[in-house]
Length: 112
Image (cartoon, rainbow, N blue to C red; front, top):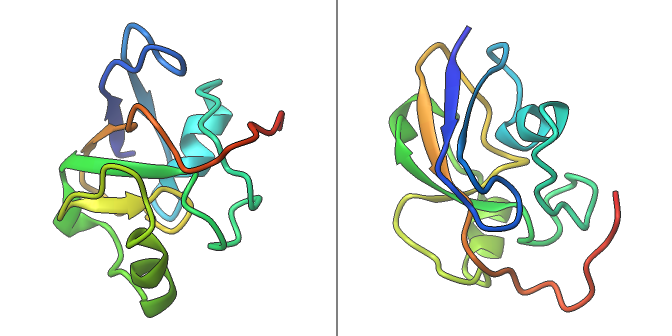
């Protein structure tokens, strides 16, 4: 099972974390299943950018970006070349390291 290393985030994961998830699981699902309550205002339907993460290691092991994810990412705060929407980034067999950006474009935080 691949490991996801989450770098420290002041709100969602202050100490950072290391979690395991089955291949085929989205990064967003894996975080939520491990009580790292990343925003996901569109309920993981690839309609917003609130679950944006920056993949620091293991990017090439994730599934390829599709056109709708690529278009949405243009609106994400803090966009980097290795940015992904965590709801659309599915794990393979390789470990990944992700950073949750400090901000999102969500003006009203949802409680999920």
